[in-house]
Amino acid sequence: MSDSPSARPEPVEGRPTTDNCTRLGFQNMTANPDLAIETAGLTRRFGDFVAVDGLTFSVRRGEVFGLLGPNGCGKTTTIRMLCGVLPPTAGSARVLGLDVSAAADEVKRRIGYMSQRAGLYDDLTVREHLDFYGGLYGLRGNHRQALMDEFLEQTGLTARAGTLVAHLPGGLRQRLAFGCASLHQPPLLFLDEPTAGVDPVARRAFWDAIHRRAQAGTTILITTHFLEDAEYCHSLGLMHRGRLVAWNTPTALKTSLDQAGQALLEIECDEPHRALALVGTWLYTADASLFGSLVHVLLRPQVTLDAAVEELRTLLAGTGIHTARIEQVPPSLEDVFVAATADHVRPIG
Ligand SMILES: Nc1ncnc2c1ncn2[C@@H]1O[C@H](COP(=O)(O)OP(=O)(O)OP(=O)(O)O)[C@@H](O)[C@H]1O
Ligand SMILES: [Mg+2]
Image 1 (cartoon, rainbow, N blue to C red):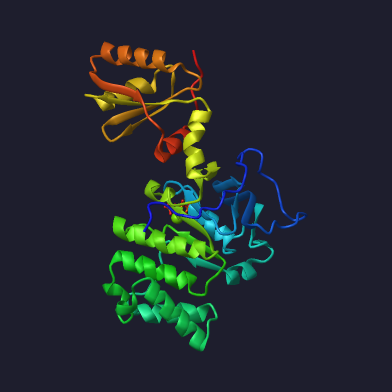
Image 2: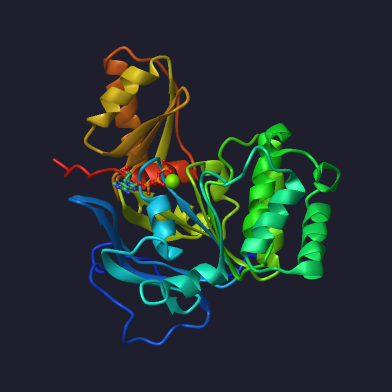
């Protein structure tokens, strides 16, 4: 198994600006055949609450697209709209060239969906699950049996075919749920938090299975709130409070801070919590957060690095905090996410 997915397709060019996309629609536009998913200002309200707020993004065919964000940011609601289960309240989405509002049933027939709750039954065996879901997806007779055997073989579940789901470990349950959603080999798969509750070894095996599908041409949209998952995706949409705050490849997202002229400093000191509180109010801080016992400080754009480090050292020393190290470090995806979700950048002066 490789550390990162191979044969990455190039991401779709362009990044969304969440402000310019609120009331767009596809009604009069021709579908782009290279795109498996296109959304324009996709929005869902529940009463006065906006759960998904003006999402505009696209996913190219064959791409593994990750929707990453904390609990309650709108990931499942987005998937439900894209699957044709929940009507949008504004904006639009096209899935496999079909408008999800106008052709919801057709969309449902052509996709695979692994729900957040996995949809497994403790009192059915592994094989019974595959048989049941295969039937739901319209697979018949020998064809269904052949696909089931192939799936069991590929995922190492053949010996467990007669095991009740109640007796399966978490990682194998996820693998089975993935099989149930994808047995009919749909061109597009939606996986809602499939790696929740699985150990690191099972997670890697799961990603291997996902990439095998992608390399065979399946487009995959996966949601997660684990940053460990993000590196496995060809492109990522970062969600925060219903909005898409960033969208690009993992590499491009990490270099985006450099391009914006924002350096990231790492502080190792004896009182990280107090240091965090202090740098949080510092003039040159765009954002500050704790990474274990280290403090990360994202500097405002175009702040001179050496002068900033010197000033920071003096500031901390002045309050009795002993710093072992202050240095520039390359941003991780976690830093990017923290920066993208910072509510505002304080004005200088
Ligand atoms: N049917 C509904 N009625 C009212 N509010 C809802 C409904 N469905 C979702 N919400 C709210 O919309 C917001 C987004 O929920 P959603 O389930 O999409 O988030 P999520 O990103 O999938 O979270 P998680 O990581 O916990 O699964 C939440 O505040 C949720 O409570
Ligand atoms: Mg969810």
